[in-house]
Length: 488
Image 1 (cartoon, rainbow, N blue to C red):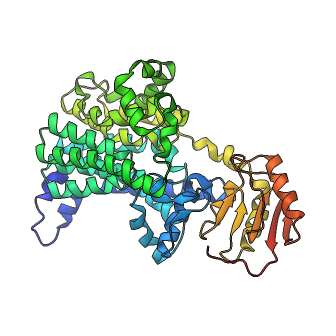
Image 2 (image 1 turned 120 degrees about the vertical axis):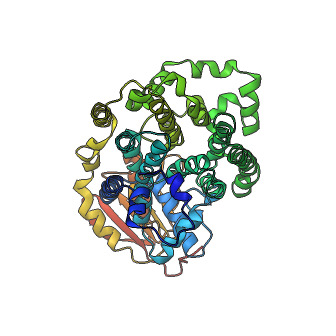
């Protein structure tokens, strides 16, 4: 089999033979990617059906993409701003074309499942490109699919940066094959997945330039990443959200603005020492590295240079969620961790070399750190009101404004106005809503039983509303006014 880099060189041929197709995507890798995609899609879909997905982040992206597809301003109503004021993830405009065909949140589950899984393909080619045997390359691809973060992240709603994962690996593959145009396309798309990925792209450019000696690709990535970081943080995001980059609040001990944070990183290094040298950081790195410890070698850590922005951002954050294997924050580091492993194995280094032992190690890590147990415990805690909630949702037949809980919100996002009950901003009136749907037994994330009952009593006392559904503590109120506008 030949690596994709050689397959790129055959681009002048009018069509691929079956042998060439097998060289581009080995049958075993194709089956692995397909099966993993189906499993991931099924898991995220079941979670959603069980009312376990949340307004943040699935409802956020689903509503934004739906509004784009309908030609409406993509202002996430329960956030209050245009989605570009969040993380400038303009790639949602491309995703919206799927919603034009048929608007469904299941597109997002499919995109996420495929994106996380298909990274195994360029990774296989990178391993073969580095001189590893087909068996070694297949082992690395399988280890990647068993990395716990992929399974866990697939269950955490939806995040556009998952699309960057295969793009990063493909970009490195293209750079090593000196395919500058392909590399540039990948980099541009990566930058559209999240603002913080501009730092990853810039760091990747530095690594390619200094360590890989790929001057053109390295210069392109370094330049585009640095320029986009400045443009997106100083121009794009403030234009849509006057408060600027929202995540700066996670580094309040370093300053009140992005500029202050960056300055203090260099001018007051003592502020970060407590974060860097801490048990929390040590445990975070342990979680990140233990699934792939079998292939690490100190002499082959150069690719991790490109992962440093991600690691630094996560380590210095005051948000503990950025230092686990449940959320999306560590994902940009994963490609470079595996590139480090490939480098080590190609040089005959690495702790373990036998494929069976490596697969066994990866399987044990998956069984220890993946949250598949949620389907037998956590994800079943709302079954007692599942049927009632489904019936109540079925009675919402217009695109009128809805006030509901965070877990039900993801099933009602295809409308311009949607709010969910939250303690940080409890509703003071309900007159502007056409529907109020509450689950008093399960008030939802960011809410409480007390707040749910408060909204219930407020709506019940409002003469404009009448109850049209009531069962198992699930209540649907409809506004009797006929002059409420569907669109703002």
